[in-house]
Length: 408
Ligand SMILES: Cc1cc2nc3c(=O)[nH]c(=O)nc-3n(C[C@H](O)[C@H](O)[C@H](O)COP(=O)(O)OP(=O)(O)OC[C@H]3O[C@@H](n4cnc5c(N)ncnc54)[C@H](O)[C@@H]3O)c2cc1C
Image (cartoon, rainbow, N blue to C red; front, side, top):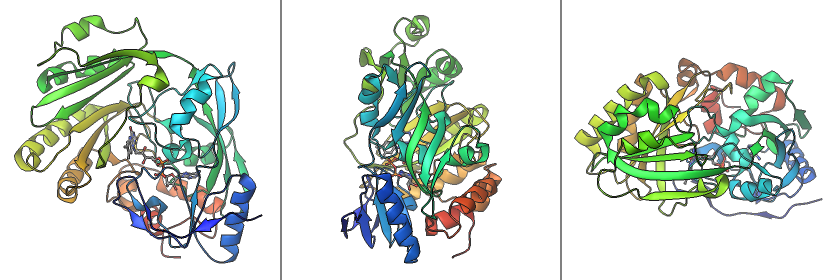
């Protein structure tokens, strides 16, 4: 069995990560994945899996074999009674919505877009927003993975260490071919979006978090406005709260109702780069106040984008930014054609000072010692990784730095 290979430069979505792998392969079956890994291991070469390339750190960078996973797509099984679904690792989030809908099921939550693959989203702790809602990987119940030895290992609910490592695994445990997730019955949501003055949003911040299924806001620095976005099951909206936060300038800009998978993710035209930190919920206000002050004082003339704030429930992933605590995230965004380095370099230490932990799929400079100091379980993660990949077939320089490993 052989899979066609090609050699070309690979770039991520924002085009800030570029490299030319020795070969790019796109297997369609688990057997082909096994064959690729065994062959690479035999030849002393490294392997990196990639989903849709929406991360902007060099997680997938390799001189050797890059495994694209888009052909490993589809629903393996869905159980409406149990609210459990098994998906192939390369299935795009945009396909999962309609596929699960055929079974009367839905993902519990979405992030801002649906362009990622499910294993890619789970691989970096991708999240949406919601005081009670965790990141995608919190719903991971089990997975099948082709390990660094080319064996297929099945991880289930009883394999506690492996499952906790598998929640934000950064593609370091191997190539996940199937993921089993807790899902929910299909549901509809009403989306309301409007702008208020930032101070009004902050004054009602806790209520906005706790009285809506999904609430987040964009801060527009130039107008000092908060663009509030709330989503609720129809009939459960906090009408009084909405009425007490009248729009700053115009009428409500968006008001629509649809199935969750149709109305939650948005489209993105302009390329941007992003750095995002998960802060302890209690420290968000101080951290955001500093962001606001710094952006106004130092960056407003250069920064073309807004700042996004979301809330995420705790989970137990060893490398998850939400490990063990309620969090609010602050995302600093910059148009990909403009300089993001000066802005992010100024804000990153400030976010860390408030207990911020980085989104590992977005720009950051954290290494193993930083992640440990932030309370992440780097060593427990690495103990599982070493069992799954004793020869380091799935390591690259970036992962070595994150995990504190010497060059192999
Ligand atoms: C426009 C845009 C919007 C975004 N919105 C959000 C958002 O709302 N919330 C949020 O939290 N993040 C968001 N992100 C970040 C994004 O969700 C993450 O970077 C995510 O990991 C990208 O998924 P992907 O499929 O592109 O994975 P990739 O970037 O391709 O890979 C991510 C990691 O997963 C690993 N991986 C991929 N497939 C497999 C597999 N089959 N088995 C094992 N490992 C695998 C890779 O090796 C890598 O380490 C956004 C990014 C962009 C560009």
